[in-house]
Image (tube, rainbow, N blue to C red):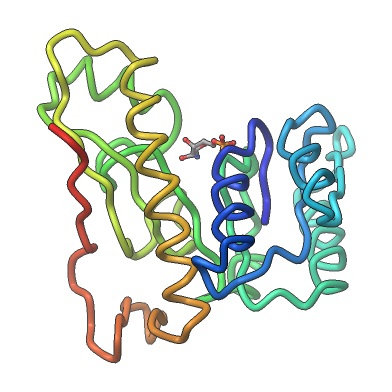
Length: 209
Ligand code: GRF
């Protein structure tokens, strides 16, 4: 699992794995930031936690190669990104094609990139949420698997939205990981397949109104 910060999604996966609510185990956690709280969460759970800083001025491919080597030591079946603040080379994305999931805090294809909660409020959106998607070469644009959707309230702020969306992230990410781990979820020729059938639109989990 790749993180850069708080690691609350990591914690949700650790808890789900421990409770045997998902058929998956986290074999390694890598962060590009040494201060990421997620690294501590991993260590407390007895999971190898690796700080892999980027070297100033180095090519992106150098980082991605080191990352690939680090991951290969643990032979992961799936690589999960949650708040990992780096963009990959197309080579790394191709290497993990169909084996890499990301969680993004918006209802993609709306609001790829940063400041999603503020942007959703600025646009007067009535709904907002989070998306788990397969990673492709386009930033935050790979085929979507599942979305958590909430109604935006008149009194919402970026922080209040972030908190409610985060609660849903902790449900949909473990769910998608479990589907993958149990062989129910696959990416075939660029299309999401769930239980052997194409999923033309992501599954939607409605949050409380
Ligand atoms: C989540 O909102 C995720 O969607 C976004 O970054 C945040 C990571 O949170 N990409 P955490 O580190 O899992 O708490």
